[in-house]
Image 1 (cartoon, rainbow, N blue to C red):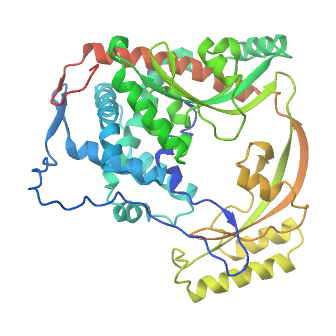
Image 2 (image 1 turned 45 degrees about the horizontal axis):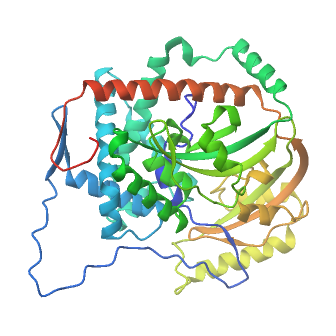
Length: 455
């Protein structure tokens, strides 16, 4: 987590962003919405459904209802893009309840400290989600409504995430400022570590309250692993279910060395393939279970890569793309994209094209680390000659065209002072958050109206 910026506080809906796919002329991207299958009719009388306002738990006199839990489950289904069956939701439900209890405690702490989350902060977070997903401003509410998710569910989650950052800033006090001396000390330590291996890891941490009875938490951890194997995006699942502060960064731990990891994690990551989306089995660590994925591996002091400076032009569709019913405007947009490919030969012209199209997306996304982009983008940019427009990349919202302006080699292992400051801050925040969460639970009065092991 970054106290300076809300890097992934809006991460729970990042997966709404459609994958960018290169397409041949007149081809279209198939987009499907997954819904849980309807229950089959039986001759037996159906069981009486539980009312939406049924109280699941009472947290310091504040009720948590079935509606709250169900809505969070729907948000998970939408954000992962995977079908969520009744059986899966039944397996996720205990952990959703635990996490929503944690959120209730955090909300009460936010209120007790008189921290006010301004509507503008919520609006900015929602706008960030829309921009990240290439959605026109103000359309997220309708997008959620189509999948039966109340916007309030997302707003409540964002409010807790934003407020909790401010709570931790207060809790850290003077320690929320990283001094030049702190950075210099870490730089000296890194210099001494040159030649050793370090790993870029993402994690999902599942807390276990009672190690003697961890069967339910282990079953939940295995359920999450199953969903990751089916294609659920790791950062999204981490943002929704990990109980580590790294959840706010999509589970990213950044670059860590072996002596910073639990020995059982070291044994796993040494044998894991890099950057292919492989996920570990449950790893038993102090306090719970860990799922990890290995994003990168390098020798301290040496990691050569490339920075690419690009320009993009985006041609928006007048309506979301339906591959079965392509509109005349969408056909015209594709023809325009093909014309741009043939007539645009430098970055200044590419920028002019995007501005003429209304600059729906920034013309200059800034320098990008090529080897750290997703494989799809790497495949587009790695072999693209400087000054040449890429093939059309079609999404539901429109057509993207990219051009490489320059490509330079860089040693990525040379961490900047700001990167070191972020890592130091992450360590302090994680420690403060775990301590405060533990204190809140110890002082809380929690009355569970459902059977939940370990609570």
